[in-house]
Length: 414
Image (tube, rainbow, N blue to C red; front, side, top):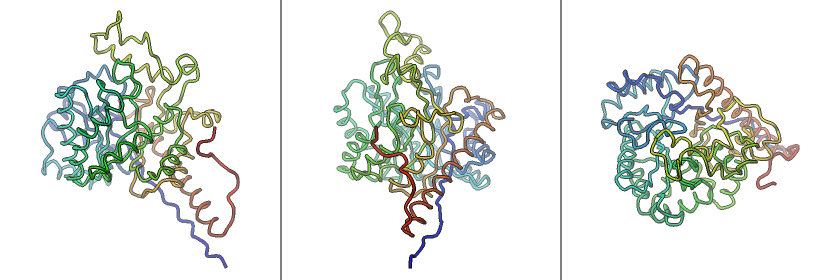
């Protein structure tokens, strides 16, 4: 007599990164009243049927060291920390959370925290500490960001720099009861140099190396990964194989958060430049020297954009062959692989929609609203379909010794 398992799928919540609409609250209104931007984003998220927001933090344009015109995807300082966050501000934001029913999943500050200039690095570290203080006041479990790279050092030297200067940030996170979740974008084009990997936390093998350093200093539980499949595609990887690599090494617990953003690789661009991207004649260098025009720095991003374009989930049609070549995200298998391989609480890890598809990144609320609503709905249904398949196949059928049909995608297969 078999003891059948019930059909009990576990669904993930769906959120949205507030950088999707940088000026939801016009600057002339939010600069004198900073927390208005958070209130209005929480309200907008409720209209989008999102469960949460990932609150975007950044240095105010008046304080930033990188001009907006030099950025591929300008960041949003929805969280404005020109003045420190305090209890009064926290109470105001909490009231907006309570009234909208939309939570804050984490606070994201994407910057180079290993910047080679000590003064600039100190400024960025101080800002990240302010982000951590805000997260603690709001009861948010994590902050999200990059590690970065010291451009004056090689990669092995950067491991030493990480141990000396980044580990203290993780200790600050530990003191506040937070995780630091590293997004793995390699950030090609972040500088006019030739390095493709400008964020050393870019791939599973480096995550493991960094985590071992963290363990030596008692902050292993603070170091986690905010996985984004778009960056895997950029490097010719696929989610299932990456998760399996972590599991094979005993590190499947490292994934603590997830972005939902795709990447569509352009076969013609790869034919011309390969996966290293455009290396010469981009326009960020003029007459053999780095251009003095900040706007020209945006051309450095051709290292990446010549061969791929970000996808907002649900907006792209995919050639089935692209899945097999790892040239776009197989969303259904992405969610299946997470459930089959990772060690995580799916009820506590929202899928955060990150909108960076250039053609659809319109900065008008009424135009953007149906676009984000559609993507959030797509993301929710894909996750639900994957959860249903997993419960049916791995629990219900398995409990009755009924085999699953077919093979599906397999890790490491070429």
